[in-house]
Image (cartoon, rainbow, N blue to C red; front, side, top):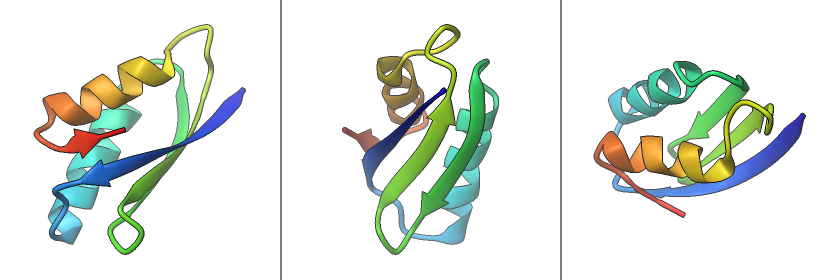
Length: 68
């Protein structure tokens, strides 16, 4: 299990947070995701055998947000 913090740009409301939560939760290998509007980041626990950090970032960007 690995943990990572992904900075997210473009979130403006709790709807954005729910959207990103849903996108991350749908990825195989994601154990938990805590998305914070206040800190503009997501703390994600994931299985690197099933999903990469780059795939997490890509999923957030595909949802219309900036991620790094």
